[in-house]
Length: 413
Picture (cartoon, helix red, strand yellow):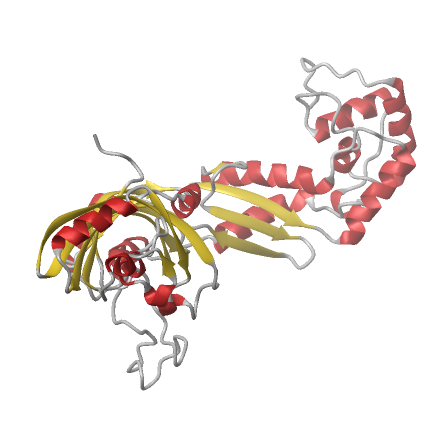
């Protein structure tokens, strides 16, 4: 029925274009779409009815006989049912949807626009996506749109199949690593590249566990995700502890079946299962943008380093004064040269002070720019870090232990 309260006064050129389109064998939906940018507030069917009335009546083609869409809009309820079936087993509250059309149909649509001479047309694909989204909302109660989504649906009109993309679920927090044998993330075995072999005893891993696995396990159980990806704000060496407030991270849960999860319960499970090895705080739900925020951050870091070396502590104090606020040049360390580009990076030692020491061993506390290789600054790495503490003191030094004391992403007052 025509909604008389919505005004519709198309220009004469549009009426002329409509008259020339009458003989093209279009359904009412496709006919109305030729003028989709006219008559704000009307549907394409209502536009078709208004124009038909102005022209003294139009016999629109039945949907399946439409020269353009061949009844695609009539089959939207069928697509909705396919989408409901394809998404069964997944919890979802927000979605986006799209469609794939045969290129020949889209080319035919443009040819019709040129033939009719309309400058007000709306594409079949855009109209179909909009109406499909409305129908999905009505059927499921979920919210459609272009914002953050749980699922993305693609109606492939050419093959008659629905594609479903399950978007990740994210958690963010901070972790403290108390175990000097844990890497941050899962390390595939270098011999078999994760497939499993005699060298890794079939595990496919270089190390039996990681911070990622200990943190992710309860979250994967709660969400029934297929796997996880761990995004940390930098990383510490395997044999270094991460203390203080902990290192910020985002945990990405891939293809989760459940999205209503309890971060507090997950944190409690981590505390129980990883006791004495990993602690997590401030665990909350996050978004994909938080991954970028965490990965792109370059905060300064504070360290505690216990160093072994035959040097007088008074000389250490004097040497550390030379480094405060000083830039150092660090060529890619020997220990990571196999996996990182060989180049020289300039970093700054912000603060350096002797905490305690005696003959043969001393402890230094540092604050450095992000990306500083602390062990190499102490030991020299064969001159690849210049200047370095061992070189300034003129004696060989060895890092006995290293702790990250703080990630200064947010200063605590």
